[in-house]
Image (tube, rainbow, N blue to C red; front, side):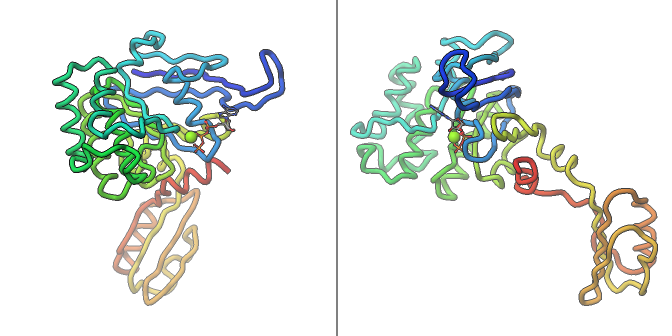
Amino acid sequence: MLEISELRKRFGGGPGASEGKVALDGISFAVRPGEMFGFVGANGAGKTTTMRIVMGVLQADSGSVSWEDRPLAYDDRRRFGYMPEERGLYQKMRVGEQIEYFGRLHGLGQQAAKKATDDLLERLGLTERRGDAVQTLSLGNQQRVQLAVALVHDPEVLVLDEPFSGLDPIAVDALATALQERCRSGVPVIFSSHQLELVERLCDSVGIVAAGRMVATGTVADLRAAESNTLRVVVRDPAPGWADGLPGAVTATDGKHVLLADGERDDQEILRRAMKAGHVEHFGVERPTLTEIFKEAVT
Ligand SMILES: Nc1ncnc2c1ncn2[C@@H]1O[C@H](COP(=O)(O)OP(=O)(O)OP(=O)(O)O)[C@@H](O)[C@H]1O
Ligand SMILES: [Mg+2]
């Protein structure tokens, strides 16, 4: 398990000074093997800073990062796959050579690096571009190369800072599938994203960060359940006045009545009344989308 505990980080102000900018104010979360963790939050909330600390690019003022119950060490990080926010590719190097080179840097033998490169080029739709210099690729294709570089050594843990940004829908699906496969084989995956539908679709759990603090963590289902308590009932052609005395408000259009009820109520009684009144087309508690939960949490 990868455990991030009470990370604090202040920029500027010098040691011990009280001024400066607090970027992280006690960030904690854990990602288990085989779990896909979506890290979301507004611009400047602290996602990149957290990931940089996990990868050892930046030092925290306090707090810790542990992997398999030990403090994370340099050797562990070599077996991690990292896609930084600041993309770092050798612009003049050819696509295939670049991916192989990073594979070798991470300890793969020549044959293994070549094979892993071939696989990734194929998966990410870059086979045709293998011999082209990186600088001749479009933004999205450079992003694909960056992802291949993060994945080439079959990492034990994946830490990806906005891996989906700039990708077209085909590449999004290819990457999603590649990440799900790694995840299923027991790799913890953390990625940040502003594409909340994607996070909702892919992630087992989500952390919402606002101004350097975690304001919500849990499975998407738990977050949605915790936030929601509105019962929505749709009845076609009900007898008039069927909802008299029931909590909530009814709106009627084209013979369809929609009852929205919040707070204290007897759902079974409402269902009985609705069924007696007409044809019940829908009966259920409204679940907010991750986008709605996000907006509520960060404002
Ligand atoms: N090197 C730095 N020097 C000073 N302040 C910094 C530095 N790096 C980050 N910050 C500040 O720390 C805060 C968190 O930034 P961070 O990059 O972690 O946010 P983020 O959640 O990744 O945002 P985004 O969604 O825009 O990528 C911001 O207020 C940012 O201005
Ligand atoms: Mg960032």
